[in-house]
Length: 186
Image 1 (cartoon, one colour):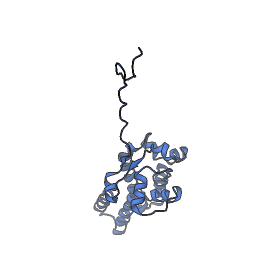
Image 2 (cartoon, rainbow, N blue to C red):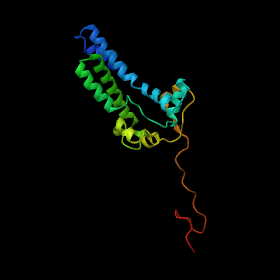
Image 3 (cartoon, rainbow, N blue to C red):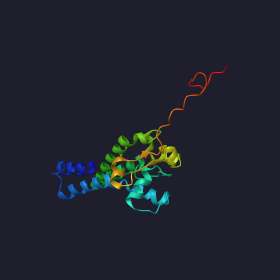
Image 4 (cartoon, helix red, strand yellow):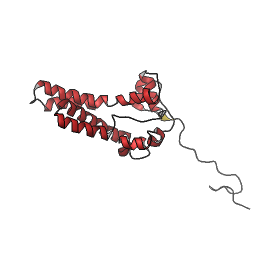
């Protein structure tokens, strides 16, 4: 939805450009906002060796924390910096649009995915940082087992819940006097 709004805004703000350039910028922005997530599918097939390509299976795999490797080439500062230099060098408006869309997407990821990582969410989006941790999702994301709703759109909008709730407190010790440390010695 954010990408659609950004594309509409780009079209409205760039009316002074020739129609072809205006559309090229908006198309690049749309591709950057959406296509950046293609790397999740690439990771799913190439690194996770998953073959169930149904959207529900793919979504549940990620939501339920079954991911082992997080390569995510398109979600990296390094690639975006290289694309920025390339867009400037080539004066390529569609590539600049892609870069704006991808940066917007990354900013939203930073804002909304911060609770998912036990370490720095800002560092997570560095390819070098992920490589230094061997792309190990358990280290990078601190994955815990979760259960996703069976219905695709419910899972998409609500996410997954922990399989087990928070640990319950230990029952009080038996003996003459109950204390958090157990029975007092006689």
